[in-house]
Structures are given as structure tokens and as C-alpha cells.
Amino acid sequence: MIWNGDKAEERELESFDITTNEAGSASVKMVIPKVGQYRVSCSVTDESRITQEGAQLLYVSGPDDDGRGYRVNDLEVIVEKHDYQPGETAVLQINTNLPDSTVLLFVRAVDGLCPRPEVVRLKGKSTTYDLKIRPEDMPNIYVEALTIADGRIHSQVKEIFIPPTKKVADVEVVAAQEEYQPGETAQVTLRLTDESGQPFVRNTILAAYDASLEYVAASAIAEIREFFWNVKRHHSLRVHSTLQRITGPLFRSGIAPMQPLFAGSATLMSGRAAGGGFSGRARGAITRLN
Image 1 (tube, rainbow, N blue to C red):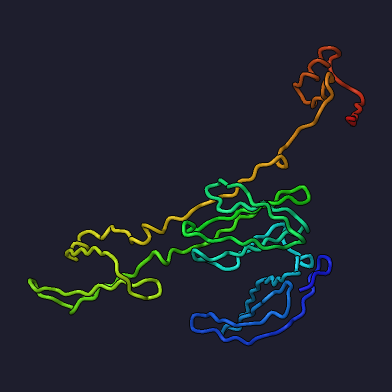
Image 2: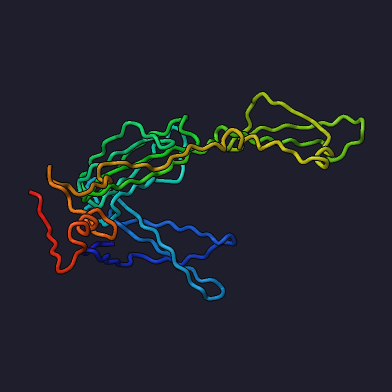
């Protein structure tokens, strides 16, 4: 995709015939020839001959590519992938439509509060920022970016997911037989596996109760993994600046400002008291304050 002013010129590089599986999904691998801005589109036709199309923009960057030939939004923060694990590095692509902009990057903003910003100075329209993911970042963090262009403030918030998969175990209880008689001794096997299915040794607490109790009152015990890991950080965008301030007209010291004329106003009342009303022509004036 090449931009000629405000118009995008597209040239098809390659096409594929794709067959979806039973779930309606498919995957394809492609090799991008060189750096640039690309649009990948997909048209799907169902049995009723109804066609729908979706598209996604791709940015392919390199060491010598500064994005000057692209057209982007005033501010964009793009995360390399959907989720990360502690120890990995999240690569954030920062784009601005105004070349050589300065972006304030607030890393790990939470609950409307932002830490001291990282100052990112772009050379061109695009750059990248490496963010090291820490264990305490689970289950999610926020990154907020802010820049000023053409007298306007532009900001964007991006959420980064760090699923706590390594903190969650799968517990399986297998009985030696399906049914037992009262008074018999039941033998059960307990299996603990991690996210990759590998067994590990931990302290375990077992509890047994009469299942008929659940017919009287349903179990109110929440799923224990959600109890520990269903709590996410939250962040909302709040921007206050002098660019958002609204001011009124300024007047010279000692000069009374002009007042609006309407029925019952002090100006009309004083005029009627002196001469009994207004008639004839009126002249207005616009004064320049030097």
C-alpha cells in the first residue's frame, strides 16, 4: 500500500484459496517481501452465496524504516501479540501521523493514576518501545500514550494481558470403581498437572461430603481459580490541560463592556426612564483590542 496524498494505491501481491474447517476458521502463512504498510483482506462465501469481507492492516518495519511513507492515525500504540508471560519482552509500536513527534508513555498506569512518563522521541512517524514483563504484572497492565499535534491532545490506552497460567493447576480425582456400597472403602487417585500437562508434587487438601446435599441447596462455592485470578486491574483515560480551557472576552480596564439588549434589561429600563423608549436606527460596532 502506497499513499499518494490522501489516496491509497494498492497493488495485489499474492492471493490464496482457503478452505475453513468445521469451526469456520483457517490459517495461512505468507512471506512479506519488504518493509511497508500492507492490507490483508479475506472474502468468505457461504452456502447461500452470501459474501462477506474483512481486512487487517499490517506494518512491516525494518532498521531503516521510519514510517514517513505511511498514513496513520494521530496516535497509535500497537502491541505485538495478544498476551505475554513473565520474562518476555512486549514490543510496542508507536505511530504518529505528525513526523518527529514526542510521545509521553505512561507504563503500568492503573485506576486513572499514571507514573512518571517515559519520553519517546520519534524520528519519522514510527518507532518501537521494549517493555519487560514482570511476574507482578499478572494478570494485566495498562500503557497510556499522549502526544500533542496541531494544537490538539491525542491519547490512547492499551491493555496488555499476562495470563497466570503458571499459577494454575489442574486437579483430577479418579475413583477405582464407579459405584460403592455403604460401608465399603473407596480408593481414589489424585493427579496434579501444570499448564503443559506435566505432573508435580504439592500439598493437597481433600474433602468428602454427601452429594445429596446439593439437591437440597445448590453449592455456593465459587471456582477457586477465579477467586484468586479473576481480579483484573482497571484504568480509565483522564486528560486535563490548558488546551481544554475555555476563556471569555477580554476588556480594557475602566471601560464598561457592552451588554445584551432585551426586555427588562437595565439598559432598556434606564433608556425608558429618561426618554420613554427607543425608536429609530441603531448602530453596532466591533472594536479591536490592541
